[in-house]
Length: 76
Image 1 (tube, rainbow, N blue to C red):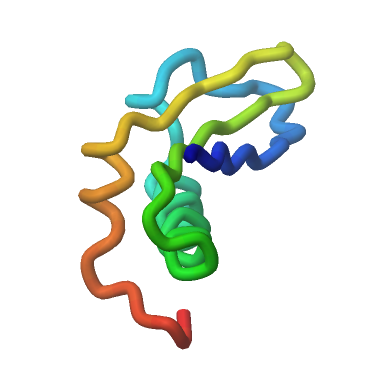
Image 2: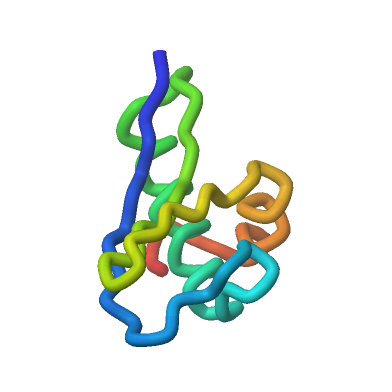
């Protein structure tokens, strides 16, 4: 029913909150979510970042993923 997309990051100084995550990384995660939604239609797809140096898991809320999806095409 659900797919969780997790990207492992090795940043030396990881962000503390989703608000501190760089915009390009949020866009990257939105692209991953869009791709997985095409692969597994009908499933809830969620995204998170796992910073290995902390360790710290930052879940990216659906509304933030959606903000970074506009303009994405299959070619991207």
